[in-house]
Amino acid sequence: MILIIDFGSQYNQLIARRVREQQVYCRIEPPDFPLSAIRAMAPEGIILSGGPASIYAKGAPRADRGIFDLGIPVLGICYGLQFMVDALGGRVVGSAKREYGFAELFIKKQKGLFAGVEKKTPCWMSHGDSIGELPRGFSVTASTANTKVAAAEDARRRFYGLQFHPEVVHTREGGKMLANFLFGLCRCARAWSMKSFVSRAVEDIRMQVGQEKVILGLSGGVDSSVAAVLLHRAIGRQLTCVFVDNGVLREGEAKRVIDMFKKHLHINLRFVRAGKIFLRRLKGVTAPERKRKIIGRTFIEVFDAEARKIKGVKFLAQGTLYPDLIESRSAFGGPSAVIKSHHNVGGLPKTMKLKLVEPLRHLFKDEVRLLGKELGLADDVVWRQPFPGPGLAIRIIGEVTAPRLSVLKRADSILLEEIRGANLYGKLWQSFTILLPLKSVGIMGDQRTYENIVAIRAVTSDDAMTADWARLPHDLLARVSNRIINEVRGINRVVYDISSKPPGTIEWE
Image 1 (cartoon, rainbow, N blue to C red):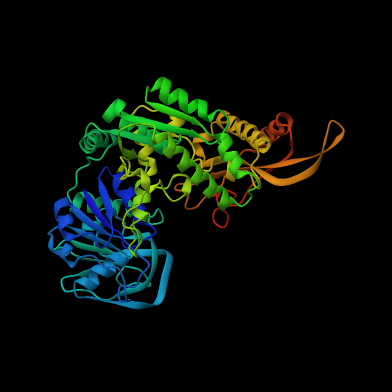
Image 2 (spheres, rainbow, N blue to C red):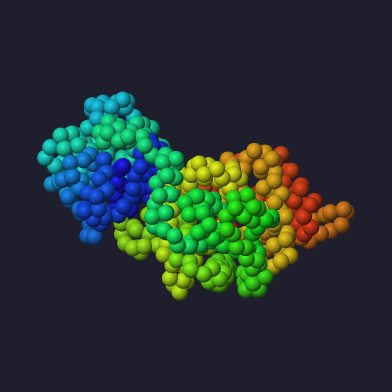
């Protein structure tokens, strides 16, 4: 396995994904991760990530200097290189000319980290500091027109540094460089797979839980669904899932979840129909953040009340993913632990006093989907597009009422039906409709109408950090618009959102 020390880079998760794509397991830990824990972990190598700080600035994050005495290969990327240089007696200085974006890399020797890499190759730079003086034993292995030390190494001690980012796609041969580090220098084995993960996770769950009861809040999304199936495989009837129908789900959502988990997968499922409570508390509320908080608090109350009916429960299971865990332990501080907040609020009540089970806590979203496939979950669950915890409440701009919900549910159902029919559902990150707080004049059957406007939002993305509007075929858009206007009473106009993220967001709110 590989240990990645996170110095606050926006690319730290990307490094981990690139390593795991090579079927090598890795962990991301903060700079203050104890040296004793690293020794116990016994990694084959360490990667030091980039970060926004200057190594010579007050409060700059630093790892234990002892990592360089472990006798294993170390790769420093950007700030990680600068930390390595500083820790080993070199010097880092502010660059006279900062370097951001593409640069041509000139490689001196095609061996080690650069084995099989072209001598001239594009790389992606993002730094304002540079190496002023290398530590004893280091030599320059690559340069750019602006940066003399674009790469350096001490091959005898197996220390390697890159001023650029090999993990991003813009560094054309970055994948080969990382593979050279993993297999040529660290001698890692390709042993990371979902099949191996299942075996280990089942064993870990059984060891943690023993014979005790576990509850899990099931939303029907991929994270909670995969967590439920994995837990059920490990502990069977000891698991009880609680599904709360908050009334702002998509059309047919509640029935789909019940049918799948209770009837087909035979998982203990408690269904709570609570739509009236949620709608009552949302009456008159238009601010999106207030909606989120109301829905979050109400969910907690309803879930807590149902959980208390199950006697002898000792554990609460959650579909917390690795990004949630990583973001809670920033290189610049942040909470020491995190409980994933359901519906984007502040977590479950302290009065529950349950121990946490988070079987997905070291997986990324794409890995969770692969795990779902390994566990035999249906494709429509595994590849389900993300759906916000507050549901359709934040896709209704303005007050949430039963009639407006009915209109949006039907419009959204038509869109998704047509998207699936065009075989585009799996190619889009999200696709949905939004009910606007506006009405417009129209003509239907030679009569003047004054009715609602629905917006369509469809985006492509890899990780939701950025997103681009989807270039849906015009005939598909025409068909969707025609069906919505003709089949959904109360709508006479359909528009398509062509803004990207940034500057927009994926959801409207």
